[in-house]
Image (cartoon, rainbow, N blue to C red; front, top):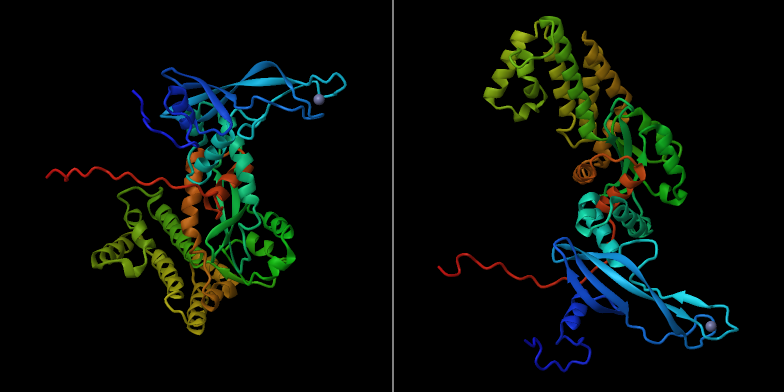
Length: 449
Ligand SMILES: [Zn+2]
């Protein structure tokens, strides 16, 4: 059956035979399809270049075809199966006896001699792994190559996107956030990474291995001094290492303690007191029927989120399990820390914070005194939130993206791979645009009704 009866468009390949159709579907410029065969596992396409006449690269004399060699490459998967291109590569010979060129094999811009993937398959693999956070292993299976081939394509095509100077603009509000890269195991402690975030553009601008002051300082030392000077605000968690690492390069910027992390420090104090009192009164770690264990989540919830039943349960649990009101004290301290964020007024916030610090300092419970000490040490950073409005809040969505990358990577062994994939996914990379096909609409199940 002829599919194209009157096909008079000169540009259209000759599609009235199978080879013409195959060539149109392959869509690889400069290649001719010789044969298409298929197995249950893959589609095999024999190709050659459309070049019939070639001049010598050295002297320009018309070259003579010598022989062919076969190169096998993987291309984009074809209708759900890996595709294998079998390229019958020509070897040319210069006929001029005085020429140095002798023989050479042809090349194509679609194929790199370094990879078994066509360029377009490598670019697509990079997009799938980077933009869509798909696992490298899954893509390797889909294309019919090994894990490293895909990872190398991600590195080859993704590095330029991440290094693009247009990716990161001038940052005025910088967020510094710690993430764990690898959980501790018998051979190493937890490995951390530090994420640097443009809080206005909501992108991760870079990832640094480690969470020590020196790690952050080293990264800052590599940045353009003018770029650093324009950063006005830096939001961090309550980590001494970050505070120390910001000087000297960002000593001019206003440091802000991220509210979420300030409240978390107070929550941790509640947890510590609960665990200790639990142990002292019952002699064991929390079990599901223990009064304090049962209210552990209620203790951490904001008081405004507790309904009457919730607060009754919490008070009952405290009455039974907290004989010296130590937990109650920690809970009150935590609530007064939260109160600092109920107001937008910097003076009022300072008043509330100072009251909290003073109350904590006088407390008989050691954990509460430690909390007061931490709050006092971060006083100006905590109050800077009210003056600048800055917080690491915008990074929460980014942390979800980072988690997605981590989950799909099943634990990274190489920091460089982790950094590349996080930045490709959440670093504001500009992906090359490609034409969008019109959508074919779903047939409505109600259309016949
Ligand atoms: Zn020559």
